Amino acid sequence: MPETTAEHVITSAPVASRRRSLAKTISWRVLGSLDTMLLGYIFTGSIAIAGSIASTEVVTKIVLYYFHERGWAHIKWGHK
Image (cartoon, rainbow, N blue to C red; front, side, top):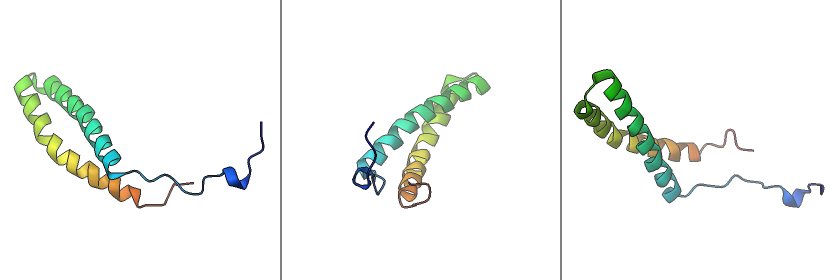
């Protein structure tokens, strides 16, 4: 195995583009909303109520997660 030299060391973490953050946000919310809908159905026994809960929370959670992700993109802590 070749020895690692300074030239092979990455000095900065890759920065996620806004489009990547948005794609991750949407995919995460789809998964999260399916989970919310399943739990809503388990607790209420009603698909209509479960769908209402899931569709209401999806909008606010997309916005919150996007800004959370972008905020963390500016924090250096934990990057090597």
